[in-house]
Length: 321
Image (cartoon, rainbow, N blue to C red):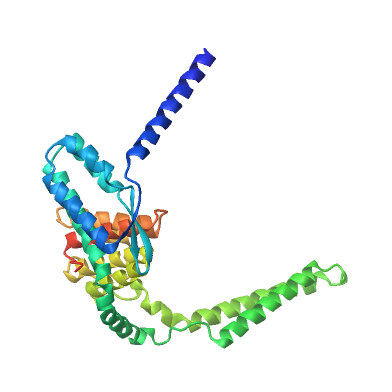
């Protein structure tokens, strides 16, 4: 009985492995595309999506789509996952509906819009730089700087002091040191560290004024949040781009008077303030979920997650172009 059960398990594992290998063999291999070729590929898929009429057409279309598009740009190569498209096409094959086709078409248009923004980046980089310089010239940024020579000297002295204490405690050549002296050195070290931390915090209190919770979110127009998010995306800093995109949505809604500004409010509290009957509640819920998974959770931030954030912002009314 045990031998038969083992043979059955091995057979199932063999069949499962063979199925996976067959699926990977039929999938279109990944190849590197330029931005122009990527835009053309998105246009082709959008046209095919509009013309889909029979489920039998889907398998051939699936074979032409790689699992990942590799996009070559002047800033390097980016990977854009197509798993969402493969999943939606499989859903349409099982249940051909206009709603699924429209969903695929809208997503392809968003990807196309973002690709075109990369193409246009070289033309408008001077305008973005001027906007960024204007933001950095504000009063709240005047006291921000890197570590000074005095900061580095303090850090070096502290490191030497800690190293010296370590040698004293580990040395066996001075057994005559009493407990009172040892405890006194420990207390002095703790006091020195506490004083250094106090001075550091006091000298950097001005930095805290640039954080979102120091002033109402809507005091910074949503278009500026959007521009900051795009600048982060241009650097492929997707986590910051999604974070800034979320606050863009909050600034937009707060600017419409949906709630009173509160600097201590959390993302979940913003969501609870949105009326259940509001047309924006579902969109804000999706925007909040993506933000929390990326910013507080373990979900990897990538271009696909940023494009999803932009899609939710456009539903709110924050036009990205």
